[in-house]
Length: 301
Image 1 (spheres, one colour):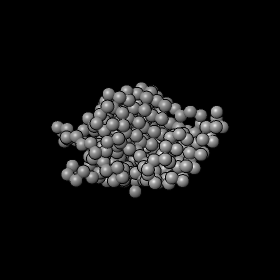
Image 2 (image 1 turned 45 degrees about the vertical axis):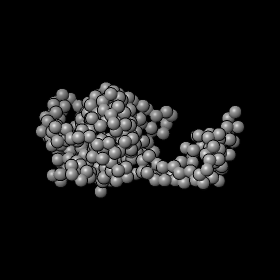
Image 3 (image 1 turned 90 degrees about the vertical axis):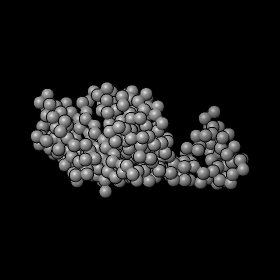
Image 4 (image 1 turned 120 degrees about the horizontal axis):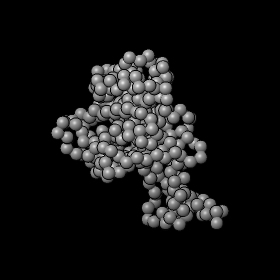
């Protein structure tokens, strides 16, 4: 079972979160039929979204990461709730690129770096907060680190990893680390953290060695006294429903809904981007939605 954990140093200078997201990424690959390249890219984004969403700590809040770097994978989207449960999709899950000369998956080539990263925090109050930065690499972790530095002026270290079997193409291990300096951090604390990060194994190497999220945090914060703030299981979770899709269809307006009702199909099938679940609407249901839309239009005229 995947788990996410948050820690803080006893002196209040640093906060570190870690996640084992292996099952989340495996589930996403199974749902979307992800290639190795798409799996590594979306897996990193899902893992980063979970780490960032878990920081919200407001029930009902959500965090959305949207990436479009102009690469062949197209748009990538990941949404997390305040507990770190996530869902997401990539426009072109079938895209596969050759491995880089060092044998690693070419995530940056798949994502591209000629676009932007958008971070949307919805706390359920007024308008969501939207921050955007230009992509610097398309490798996801570097782009999230740059977002915090550029948009929020928070010194941050973000490390994300997805290990995919090069032969079978299956997701094996996935996880991430997110470390942030708090207002009380002095230069000595930041220097010590920098030294720790320089000798730290990659996330997937730590997972392969059997390290837990707690042990990953303690390795990153070596030399500090560390306190656990909270920990919890996390999952790939979609909150779609037929009712949600019905509300979405209403936004088409009565004219469009009547055209759907009048075509030759006996049913209208909708598919969720995030979990591929299908919802079927009969002609009678479409007609009822058209009546509701027409009434709403009349009331608003």
